[in-house]
Image (cartoon, helix red, strand yellow):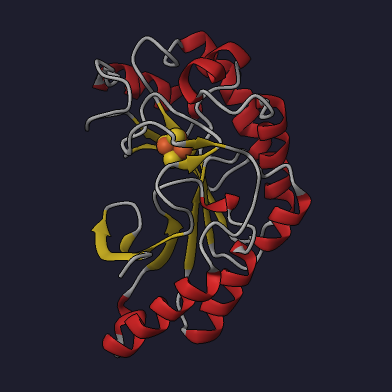
Length: 239
Ligand code: SF4
């Protein structure tokens, strides 16, 4: 299989079958903590990077080879080795998967393109969206996520706020914390103000433990993670 991986069991999503919608490391971010390595093509230009028809054919053959397998899945998860919302046919893929199998669909995204109303419409039939927001401070956004020059943090925040208004499924906001980069408690309080506006169903704190794009990054220690969780409130959990 080229575009399907798993199913894998994860604490966050349960038993999940992954679908990749872009070739390796096509992304509009080049996060310092990315576990996949450096971004190969830093682009915010949406296109059909991988033909949806090819992904669907693989999915259908997985269903045929695993009768009853779809019922055991907690999610079919759209993520992969780049930013999945860059694939302009993501909405069609979600619709077609829902037609072929009764399964819940999760989309993991860096949230960069959510200010586009068309994309939000395409994501409407998903069940769960897991967007990232690592900081609300422009300089730190540049430092940690290293976005394409056309992506500004204000537009990412606006997109997340609009998503919450329009999307009736669950939103679990992920925050990746890197020691000494975005874990300062004053900036976490600013982040909290924005998170309150977004009003996700859950806030999940993560910190890099595996090999990262930039060497030498340190995870945030447990004591500080607990303090940050305290600031972000009861919906927040450490994953
Ligand atoms: S958004 Fe995701 S895929 Fe893109 S660089 Fe960041 S961690 Fe890697």
